[in-house]
Image (tube, rainbow, N blue to C red; front, side):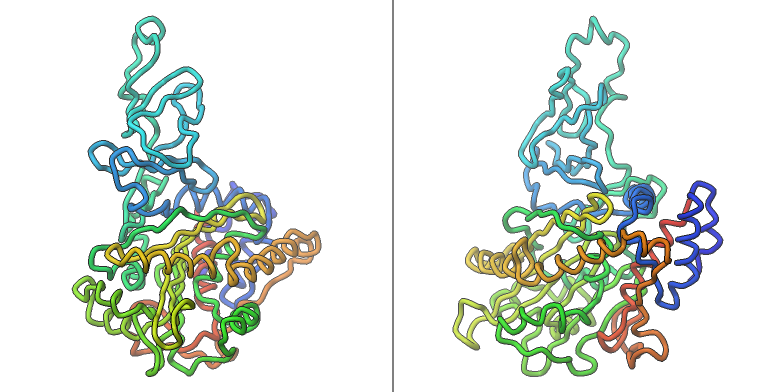
Length: 453
């Protein structure tokens, strides 16, 4: 895949033109400029060409179940109000008064029938319509209130309860954007008979690193587990070793998104190791027979919807139960929010089947947070290395010497990974985890958007 024709963009600086052109010519060889992971010009362009044009997830419908419920979220660094109006319709409203630009909503979440600007009192209902202008008859006699409601995201949609917005009115629909990758999202978010719901509040924390590091890692990088997470595996009483061939396929080139799947061996439970009472809440009618069969053999998945939505879905023995008696699973979805060159704000939610018992929901939540939360044992390992990548990337030497990082695993002659020809789902699917096709997929998508005027 080549983007050389579009790299010659007159609106890019000569340095960015050279940097992106260099990446264009070498990405298919698995070589990537290190400096893209902490570069102020790259970061500014990402906000314009990726976050202002791609579909971005803002949360889950279960966070705003009632009319008037709202949460504050960001697209890139821009502030938005996600709210359910009095009729039940979900809106994504720009948090800025149309009069002088003041943010009209200061609270992270709540329930509101109106938002009143603290500066001059302009007031908007929970659909974003302007309903009150103080002293309008004296000050704004000819003002048409219908033209001065809060700005709304041009496109809003949802998939399996996940709320997405896109700031580009000309962009393809969400269904087109997700494309065939919906097949894998169905396995994780779409099988519960009555849907999924968020438990607790999303955890948020700021860390050093580039948002792309998180997106790439969760798109399919099991290779790091045996090194970076070795101590965590030992603490949990497991053994570090490679899984047999065919039990750890990686999915690449699936509409610019990617994921990795760990299948169960014959002596292990499927359905993400859900306990039997939770498996009974899954509905085979909500997926195809091929999807249901794969889910029945699934133990662990993680994936990324470009640009910054990832998930991890896993399970195993219940830490609070007797050995061999109880199983426990968790589904965490998260966002790698850009907060400046080399800095991320991580948002992490826990999802559970709505019909599961309150006791199960609580245990699942605690397990998810203990592994992938602000102080989670897996999370801490990632934090250290992603921050160090950003520090190296911002160095003068990385920039002036045009340093490259190596993403060649899985390319011809590099590893024994083979493309599966009998895989039931879409995408380019490799038979093992020792390849980096899913990371190259994320970077191809990134490069395509960055070089598209």
